[in-house]
Length: 55
Image (cartoon, rainbow, N blue to C red; front, side, top):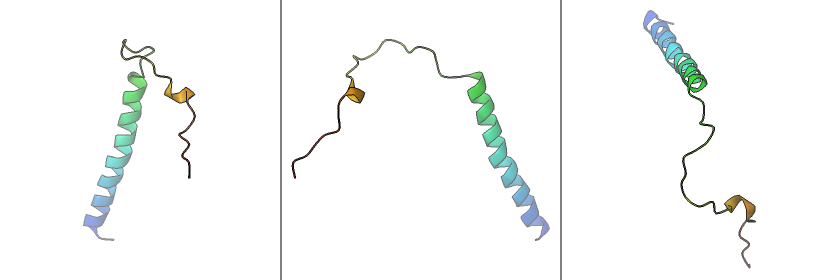
């Protein structure tokens, strides 16, 4: 491998793993909120069975 290839390999590894570490730290410092603001009416879509089609 040439010096340029090794340099780009190291840069790409730093970019990928650095992004992973940065996103993990961001999510650790700002987790999902415990409660959400009031909004729309709950329509209970998860309680309804999938649509059945006559075939």
